[in-house]
Length: 347
Ligand code: RAM
Image 1 (cartoon, rainbow, N blue to C red):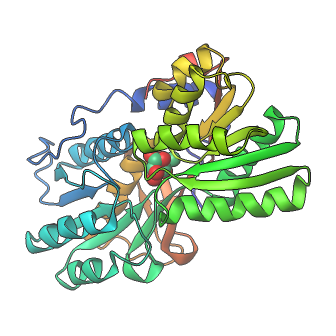
Image 2 (image 1 turned 180 degrees about the horizontal axis):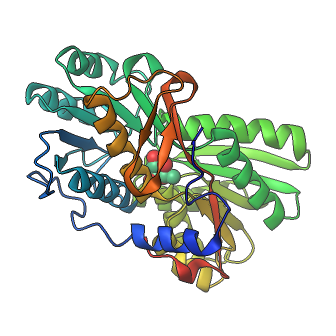
């Protein structure tokens, strides 16, 4: 639980807009791996390497730019490396290399809860601190997990949106990311429970996995519509999936008939909200997530925290955070984007 309520909490709309808008402006690293002195003024020797699920995903471009901003602020050295496709095997090689290089802290969004653990444990034995963010590993093989929002809340906001958009009745399908992704699988299980408990007239007829690959997600959207002629809605709890599905729907006969919601970035979804393909979707601030993860990594490296429940640290402009159960730090609440507010955001 955060000690000080930060900007994503519903305390001040203007602060929220400012926060989300700014977060999109800091990225200059795009999808390429980058190394080097971050140019901070503090002479800090801390080295931090971000390893996203995959490169080329605007969500991770934004989150990792937030990480770079934090590392710049404390004057350490930032780098980003990662696989082209969202596979655990691809991530393992980068974890091994970073450990051999003696990187102080690795910040990882895991493509699988278990498959990275041998490499992560070797890195930790060699002295690196390991922070997961966005998508966790098994809690035993990392020092800290930076959670973007409470998993039940992320599930509920998506179920609430689709229920609202389809009149709380009819067939829906889920278009997810990688089949082993820790974060999406946790949310899907909670969405199933919420649907069963609170929405008896909504039937989940299919769950498919686009692997956070744009073309595969696009093709699977077409397949869902073909396989389920009575489909009323699609939930895609991945920024890659929801954008690809929106692009497919926007030029299909299903536009305006099959609802689409999920987790997306405003910049990827803007056209589809404006053309009426999508009514409303949700996300948190990926830039703040990376920024918080980098400051948490620094606090671990400095020995200010160990991951014990109750440990606290300051994450730059975001303020003070406290470590909760299972060595988890919570960023905040998800936020809903729609035609009324999407123009206010740039990430
Ligand atoms: C994709 C990734 C990421 C997830 C977001 C919502 O960018 O799968 O892990 O958090 O979607």
